[in-house]
Image (tube, rainbow over all chains, first blue to last red; front, side):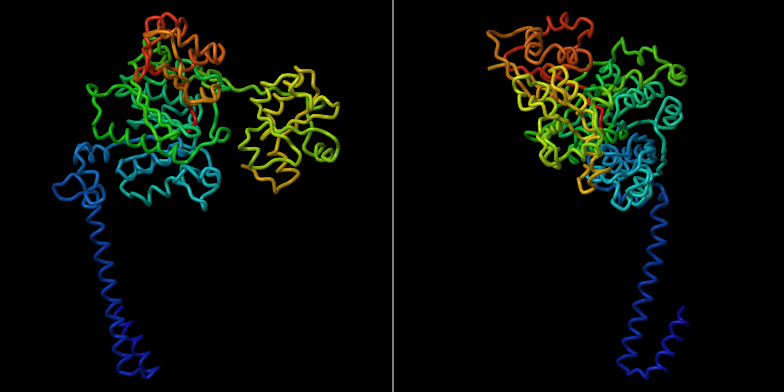
Length: 446
Length: 94
């Protein structure tokens, strides 16, 4: 290297007839480069030493400096707390609004092994809350996008990804080898499946959920003795009461708060803060309006009637598919109207736009304000359903009535409602989403 | 003074508000009284939803009740002036 540098300098001298000042400057530059390279080499060697467990200490030098700020907090249970984290194996199901912040803090805190289960791909509409994913990773598997972020964050954590949908066939295999599971999923059927799997495998569950401006947090099946999800919700919610973030909306920090609290509860579990003596089952509710608030409710113990805790539901019954989570939770059966008489396509409606008719948009007013068709009037579905015949005289002029919504479900309910009042109407198939796809691509999709 | 009834999550889709203040003629009353008030105001479909799918807390503690015959347990629960009755529905999204 030196020889090359000198040769280079010589050539430079021969070619350029440098002055003494110029030669001195060049010499200084080469000296500086040499010093910088030596430092880099020393850093690399030190880094390798840092990552190795140090002589007589349970953690590596890297770990002492990385985790120093949490290590000195009394509640953290000291070096033993950190060693527990390092030896722990945590399964995070769902790398979305809850999973992302939870994963971030668990990995940063030094959990030894993290499993991530998610078969979904990053979508632009996820980015406002799913903080591990980035604009340039839209279209990538969420579990892999999360891995990219986490491996950069903390090389001490081993990441295992499962790009699969958790179901009866794989739940026991995925859970094997893990001690804790974070339920960061978004449907009741998955929540019951995770619960049953965790109770049968002996995993403590940190359960979180959130929607709009609120969230819930709980520790279930604590040390395989505390109450489980079924103890508190033996019956699934009616399908029409189940709203997704896509339909109901969600504020990023609201779901983020719950994800972060989930990571914190996992840390308290792993470091050994909770014991059978001091642990009391709870449900914490976070609300962000009217003011930021956390309310913690004391739950009861296990229920004798709980089908999973009392052994009625067995591993065999789950694996054989005898326990059908989809059927248990049910699905919404949208009224399907007759496409010939009760419905109209976006193309057909487009041809009728300039004729005399009424167009009623039944979406909530917040969505109507985002975008709407010209001359449409907004009557949200729940308000429409409360109206009586006398309130609706403007739709009884004998001209056609059309209903539209976001995807074409509520608009069918509106047609059905008008029928009960004896007012003829049709709904626009596929709603504004379809209008944007097929007629006017400048109409925003949200 | 009054009894404070609070609603969370999907329950607010029905009530369109976070809470109600119920004034009773005298205190304490049994939880059944509050229960009837909720059913009268929001309909029995909402009442059935609470019994089937939700939990109920009095102040900060869950109330234990049999989903088949909830009023048996509600009869035994005394609600005082200033108490909070909280409706806690399951939320599954995340």
